[in-house]
Length: 385
Image 1 (cartoon, rainbow, N blue to C red):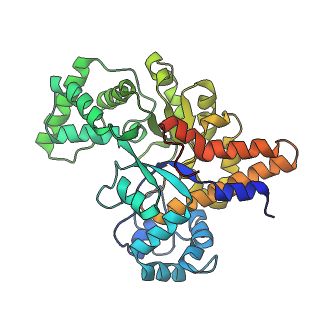
Image 2 (image 1 turned 180 degrees about the vertical axis):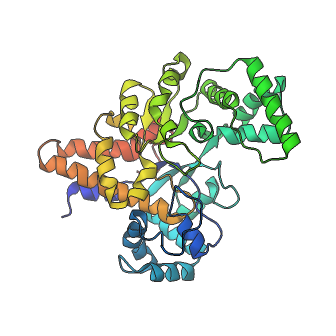
Image 3 (image 1 turned 30 degrees about the vertical axis):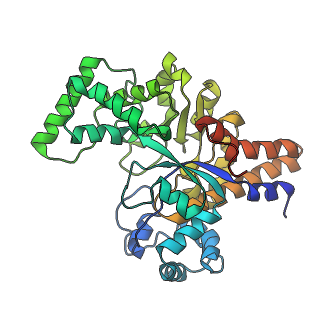
């Protein structure tokens, strides 16, 4: 049944506060199905299809109609129609249907294969805002051979230049070393020594540049604290390159207790399956915010349960909407669809039971879907409302 809350949620222009670009080149079906799996980069085994998953079913249910197909269209029909329309048409249909006014875009992974900030804005008719990835910045220094006593100063200068037009920075520390390491600021001599070893190793081994040194990861994080922009930190699940038990945001307690950090917004991304820990941190620290973004698409119809759990402990002013879509434009659209459906089901139920007022439900929807992100990232509130 259509309710006033459902109508309001459907019309709300969201701020997707953590997202990546959509693909700019065609995919084979095998490659497409690989991107329906967050955990494994391997090809899908020939005896199965990744469409047989919560995400796959959700795509057939909610994305098929945007390709002029009936809901639940078979996977073969879905793929044939998608290929017939082509990359640009498919991308524009999904991005524009998401109902997003602002994309806060991390371009630190897959540059060249996905739309950049301006490309996302053009394809969607919405605004794009830049997020700078801290580890990518460090890897640029190593590629240029910057090391030793010059490293810290050069990192700070490049961070300042790179973030002049950015609204936030992001760290993927959880992937590179885990969150359960010493996260105090490293001494200058330790930074100089670590950067020298890194550049020397690159020169001798010729291996690809990938920052994994805990000292330099810590240095980048605290350089970002000094810069003062909101800091997004990956927590919770991701691909198998990540040790999940080391990505629990509760490991950030000592970092969050650092006095200098208290002055900077910290946004815990994804959190699932540690979203209750994320909610606790958002309650315990005034500067901490969180989302359950990455989980929404991959849980499909079960996203409703996670959204309900995200409302258990954390203040509602500390929660933000995110799709964390990367590559497939279906994910940019589907994240919005599943969040809207989940929040409507949850809050409508509480209103019907007399636990919440309808006015409060409407207000919380606006906070989480749009207003909190506008405040955290300093976005212009006069854009689409």
